[in-house]
Image (cartoon, rainbow, N blue to C red; front, side):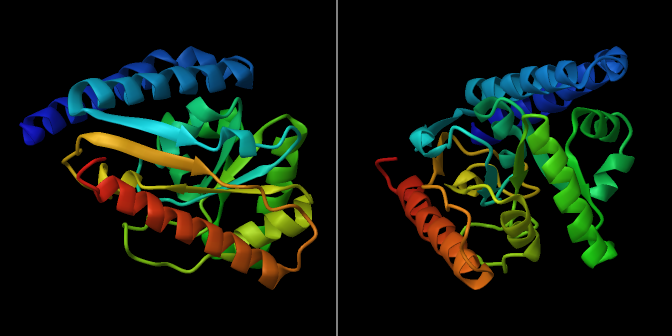
Length: 241
């Protein structure tokens, strides 16, 4: 039954995405806010289909930890789900993504037009400067930069080092950084066909205020995210979950 429900969701996901990508082409000539609204509409559809067809819902903890002013989201990244959900949790997210994704027809055009932040990983120090400039511009336009500090999806229970991009944003933007823990990889794994029923948990952790030195900040960020992610993973694996 789970395999069948996963098949139905995957078919619906690609169909829904194709319809909106093609139908939304005229929005490329519209103000960026229209594209952001369309992305939110797409995300709402994906999350609704996931719940309806695969039986996978979600719950959010710690919304009170989101600051009133500008801030950056630094999130654990286990699943494609993580690249969708912030469209529904934030008014105007600006995802930090690989520059190569901009070359994808339609998807890349929408991402660039909406103000998401592309990073050329091969550019070294220049990439960090560009990341900071684009993030500063996004904040000036009322957007919230969303970065996955490990740089790629990480399966539950495994570890990847935290990359310098988040440290550059923390030092250069001088705004709070909100760590985010989640357990989405238990239900929608990397390149996994099967989507498991259950409830994905996402938690906004207390913001790290500006002013810490780089080693202290990186230790605080990684410690907060990893500890909370382990807890959420254990909760997700619990028979009572």
